[in-house]
Image (tube, rainbow, N blue to C red; front, side, top):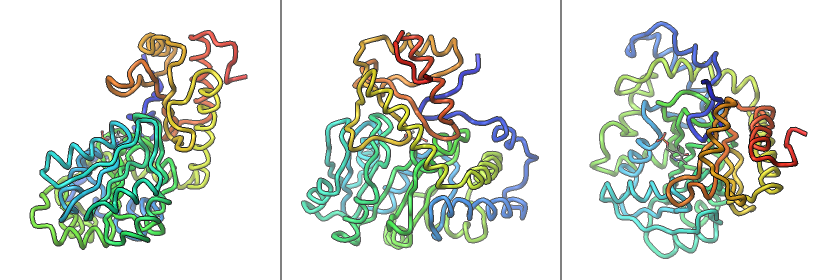
Length: 362
Ligand SMILES: *Cc1c(COP(=O)(O)O)cnc(C)c1O
């Protein structure tokens, strides 16, 4: 049975977007393809409030995280860890033999600029990783404030941002905040099928990459840039997905960026209020995410059973992430093309299944 996805990726994909993938195939070295990439790229730049390059990698987001680590660290990276996805930056760094230190906060907490400042002041770092939205805990870190602190006190530090579960759901002003590499995947807030990683890259990051001798091949920013200038990619891209991306970007811009951010905020508020009333929020109130909520299972119900029941009614949420949070929390994603109406519907279903007196639909 078809289930509407309220999981933090892949998210619900509208039929018109699925259908956009069935356009006739075109050669990736043809002008037709260059026209397509040249058409979609300015829309992505608008989404990220940037005039700098936005690359379209055929890859999941994790691939670009690895690529970014490989080609930006000359000295040492500082990795900020507040959950399972931010820990991935650390695993990638170690796996590539890149010098790294980590600063941790408890899961459910976020990073203030002060914590990061204190950690950066302890070593000679040239890269900082930040996970804008920690999907395992429902924490959104204050990226704008963190970036302002870094630019003020550590101007040469390259800021790598995992925005996989945030880009196209919340405002990210790439140029004004002076960020360096901001990575996303198509299957989260973009509400596309998986397979693309949209990545903005700054002049500072490109300059750094020039100095790194063994920066890898597939993700090499400088090689990407060379092809980007003629609206192509070095290797064969997922043309059908880019057709869908182009179509989706039209819809996103037609909705209006401010309206899209506001819709995400409205959905988040609905879920947060419901969770406060009937359960508890796992994340610290000061760092609540606008795209996914981790709800503490204060009623001690079986989340696996809840999801089975939801499945019979045509919806799916996520259990807690990993052995640490499974059954202790559950997650409701409110990202992409979902609407407040969808959210009221799924919360109402949970209320019915769990037998709560209150219903979010009332
Ligand atoms: C989903 C997710 C990832 C992994 O993205 P892939 O596209 O599966 O590689 C990384 N970071 C965050 C915060 C995520 O939510």
